[in-house]
Image 1 (cartoon, rainbow, N blue to C red):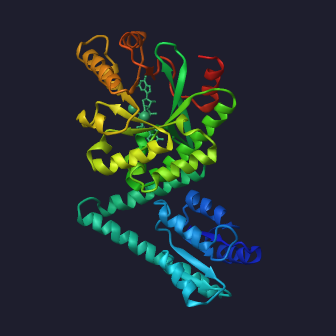
Image 2 (cartoon, rainbow, N blue to C red; image 1 turned 90 degrees about the horizontal axis):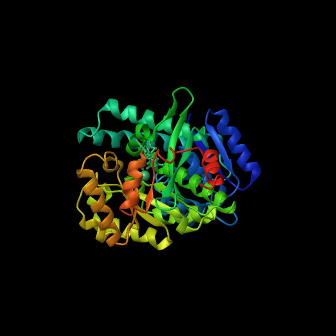
Image 3 (cartoon, protein in one colour; image 1 turned 135 degrees about the horizontal axis):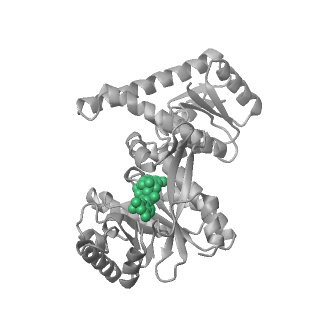
Length: 400
Ligand code: C2E
Ligand code: MG
Ligand code: MG
């Protein structure tokens, strides 16, 4: 069922349109002002947006500009509703990226016609895009169809609130105190049970759904952290950012907005990135990182040592924290290679003024080793697996 979002401040008009479109078999949502409309657009991702031009506070033009600057909604077909038939008004809307307009009062046939032609065009564009990818050998018709199906399933799961954020404590190696929590997403599937992110994050990344999911994780984790701050616990939250999220053009303003909405101090947020980002376009990656740093958030390099082991990037990029991948931590105590590597990483990171977190600490012997070589923080099953918020809170209350 195609989803239509109707943003119109006049209740009678809005309800009329909604009723009419519902009768035509569309899945409809109404918003009574620009701000509500924007929120509904980003969280629901409609197939077509119908939006009034003249609204108090955020008007239709403002809504369109905001939608077009967000990669999640940049290409959603947008139809203006206007009371004025003046050409100049129309031009302004079209130049901002509107796809069509309707002049009030319009007939049912005009409204349905405008929506149908937008939907048809959108389908044609999607098909062309997939064709291009087949020609480049990147996609077969079968996989294209499958990917669309996967994306729909993931979108539905987000709508049905099947995703959950778990929190894994990060402990000060010397004091044993919880310093921070890594937010890790899980999918609580109604039939398959708990699904690990390793299974669905690659699909989310491939289909672009990661932008929506990642933003939801960030929002949820920041909101939760603010609740814990208000309860008197001071700790930081680490959120994973995928490559596709990192390449969003308005990433830093989205992060700033989420911090403002949730009230979380920027210094209480840490964003985890992986090494693969560093090899692509160094200059633009450094600029994007610097923008995030300017907000006051911390940046960490996740799974260190598993990617492109050019150490020179550690000095070029403005990182605050280095997370040693768990493959170096296991067996740290029985072979000499991993031990030597971990010792060297800790020493090098400290000399570059980076905090060091060891991932996947499972035994007392590993912990003792890290303590001896002055690793700052550790995370792993030895202390706790990732937990739902209520269980994590219990750990905080126990004062561990
Ligand atoms: P990661 O960021 O390196 O997260 C650490 C992973 O190690 C987590 O797996 C965690 O549960 C697991 N782990 C922690 N301690 C131990 C231990 O002592 N032993 C072992 N064997 N494993 C341990 P998880 O939760 O399955 O997440 C897997 C990966 O999925 C994450 O690796 C991260 O790359 C990705 N991921 C998870 N949540 C998100 C998210 O919200 N956004 C993005 N973009 N990626 C995410
Ligand atoms: Mg991580
Ligand atoms: Mg990791």
